Image (cartoon, rainbow, N blue to C red; front, side, top):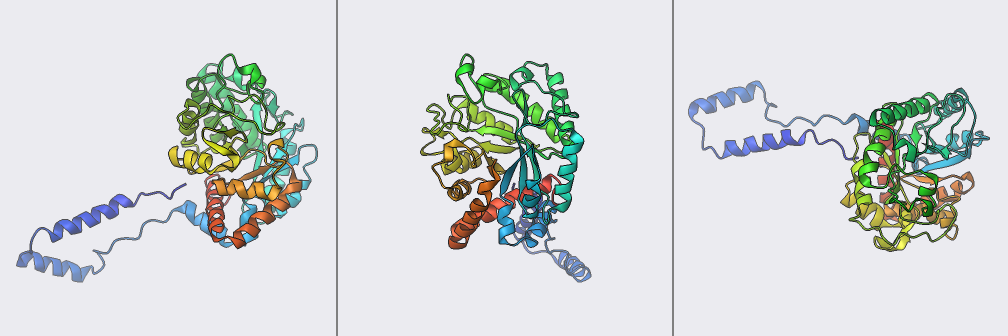
Length: 398
């Protein structure tokens, strides 16, 4: 996010006043006397005032000052632990990881999840970690125990009247907040054309889409984003630039391709519209390849997709998170360390791995590359600042 520009009009107005004064001719004796008297009474009155400090960036600067380089880089990772046994998360949090993803499914009550989340929050040596889940509804709902309302699939949520969907989204946000969850890897913003649902293995086959056109999807997804934000839970729009036109799941199949999507596609525009929400959601990048956007790399590793299209053309300057780059079949032919480096090079912010085993290798690879390559070190600096700015906005730095 860019620092606020509230002071620019004032500075421009002051400069304009000086220009107008210099162009108005020499003042008469009375004016000179008044000016001299005024000057002597208040010698600093003509000096421009210091712009007010940005409290968010002050928090970020303070946090950065307390982190060595390794701790800074650790903030760029969200690492999974299985819901059946969350104890490995203790070591990850002690190591300063940016976030912990609760992977799998659980029937544990909200009080049990909240106790673990609270322990991690209190024990974090630096910025508090994101506590993340997949809580979409239908077949994709990580937390299902007492205290968590069972959610219909997105395709059914999309059939609800707007007020009922808003109410359901509010309940979702309240349930997650009560359990200490701060990041939901939802909602799905992919558009699956009518009649193709069954063939769309990752989304349509499970009813994870809110509709078959952007006009259907955008208001419903916005309602979910707002419902989460009302309870200080950050949403994640996925899977940019869209998985609605593929026929295989990148978690299970390598080389998944969407040969149709372009920068001008309605689905891409829908992501851009939603990403600019005041609620400041994250955007998750798809692991598929889009030849008409970049024929040489999957979106995860594509600077054309992440930087040129999402950040440049669509104007998104928030957190870009990868889909899973740990266990996903899509990336098994790429060394784990290279996966993290290439995602950050593309313009990403947070590396998500659902398996903790590859995290040390990824962290070491990013550190080594940053130490050897000044340009990549600058990329890491920018990603860390973006990550910490999001945490400051979410209350995780205060």
